[in-house]
Length: 486
Image (cartoon, rainbow, N blue to C red; front, top):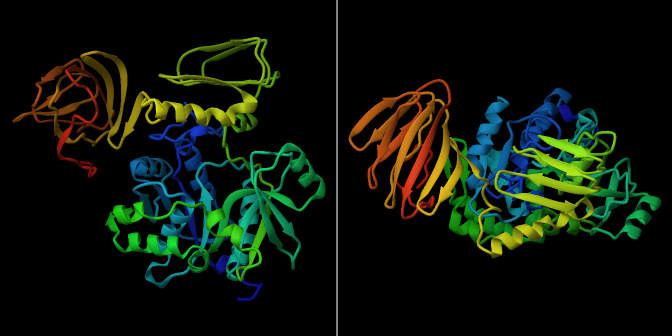
């Protein structure tokens, strides 16, 4: 293809990488509800939704966009669909990883899906957990990148640095026929080295955004990491499709080597047969990798405090305080991060917020659950909030979406009392089916087959009181389930 190829005529396949657990943003981000699905960037939409809208907006910039491909975790599949539905966006497919194997296998799944039917679009690949404030600059950079990628080049977006940042990897570039050539990838530097990079010029932050043809990715991966390419192709050959969900074979995918896009391919391209170019991006980018980054992008008062939720800050400076529900007050503090959730409070020096992931590691080591689930747990049918618990009882507030239902199920170790707070409940209790409304209740004996459904047009809320010798979530025997759970 010639360099005059118009970007408008090139088939473009957006790819959103929505895996990851965001451990450095604990306690707000957890494995069951990670940072990409949280509202963090100053809008009323999640980071994943913002990324989806940014890509959809490229159509207005003249690019020939297909519906997006989303690569994510099996456990988050309904979060993905629900958040896209809120935006009235319909994905081409949601590719579900049974286990995390880093970004190189994830991108390979997207490339194999894009190549179905003999197509070979340009993939525009973006993580789901970044922010961009200048969407016009973002669209202009992507148009340039798509034109380069259509010439079988590998393109990475490099962020124009505005500070000697030590938390990012850097890209060293050299000018070449109108598009910078990538000469080297550099690991996260110390402060002095980062300052030298800014002084010398030609260095950019690695954004983790890539643009390249699906076939070019497969050729590069087969050249540099044929083991990953072969293993993912084996898993792909055994895939199962369920509406929008595409599941590679779980056993085969578990055997795929875990590797990032950078290590598997990008860092090997300089000096190889693959032409790696960089397009600079100056668009107010931030990857929100830690609470320090959240403070940077948040709105602040005259003292530099970013206060989110029910917060009172007195005689404090340059501090981030995030309340999820309760009143949080700080007095006489500087450069702190304070994050409150229903079941955990985290306080850290702002400059050491990257180390929060070590707290997550400690929770895992101690066998605790606060790093995996919130007190309020989202399910495909709605959510439940565990509001009280004791040795032989647990109280939950449960919301069921209109038209949704829980599985037909039974418990070996607990009985349940249900009280309807708002809405209409259709309850299967053994061989009886009944309709209950506000202030009405029922009792589910231990061992009884039962189901809760919402036949109405407004959300159903109930209070559930469990009693018994064991109250764990794994004490569920499912007989029927709308969502394919076992």
